[in-house]
Image (cartoon, rainbow over all chains, first blue to last red; front, side, top):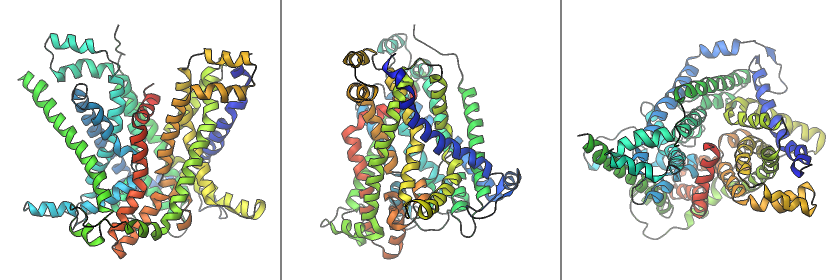
Length: 293
Length: 288
């Protein structure tokens, strides 16, 4: 018997147990809590069935958080992949492309909280950006005020995430042999057409995975909202900027007895939405696989 | 017209935009560093000027404010132990999953992959409940004390295991089969064979996963805010949020930027040092 067959269970069990007991089982427990009214260990747990879900659907604050998350996922996704595709048109040949690729990825290694603190300083009402605007005779804007903060967050999100998808898609594009492009150039295809008819079809699989990843990540957007809105204070972020994760955090952390049942229901709903969006994304991105013979 | 747009206009505009993006990223990182060396008045009044004399004492004031020194120690310990544990647990599992011909192997891999699409929110409430119960349970019945930082460490590990197993399984598959034969002839037991033969060969992949987890754990925010809210148990991102809010009153802006530097620069150094490998590892595991 091979060594790895003998060692199968002893090697697998630690990971399997940690994952099952501390990740999968708590998820199921969360589902159970979402069907009750409960404010934590030591207090009484009463059965509510689907009432938590019904109440959430009628809760305006949650509806806003839900819509916000959705808009961030769609609008953010469109911008991110728009920029990614444009970069792919040129990044194959541009001078300094390796350097560009590594610097564009840089925001991914930086804490969003730190980005929020720095950018919050720049976007303050009396901050640096407004000072610069005044030099040009333009009116200062309340960037982080309730009306504009949502757009600023989406902007920050696009800036900090796009590098990851560029890296992901470019690593797939690197595998395409150069002679394909040379042939395309001979028959007079423009750079855009080369991207449209060669790069994109050949990297479509990775794009499908990237889109699913973005969906999963966008539904957990949390720290960037905190960093852009609360300036570190204990205050809750304004409602127009809340995401589902933020709303859930507020409910769990909130003063008085936390409504854990309701917060758990938000978690389960996020899971359901994630599942639905993953299936939809798969559907939309499903194509016949293109391969070079 | 087609040529003008597709060959000249679009590529040129995109290239310029990319360079603007690059310059912005570098400028932001550099600017944060410069700001951290100014006195607080200059930070606010001349945000884009160079410091007259570097104010290194900003770092000592940040270090003392908001329990930053304790937070730094917490972050280092959580990151080192967390990342080490994740790899130590995931690598053997990934190895047998990648190699075995047993029928349970494939469904088990899918089972781990499922964890990648479960959002953190789904288990947020259970984590809070478990945190409270574990604390009372250990304090009343077992050890007489407990530290929420241990709970944070355990959950950080549990939540990172699916990704690590998934990526490493893909990586282990790409290793040649011949390497075990050497160990088998040698007559070594499974554990010794793994440590002495497989780990050295798989080192690039293991390092990548290790570093990815180091970055993830270092920047962890939501879990840290929930599980370890007290000032002395906070990690660096949570402490920076605290520092940020106290600076609103004390206006020690130089200190705040010093705090940002303490949080950000170690990861940038790590990235500059191992850069390409991190990007490759992050992308290779997923695009497979």
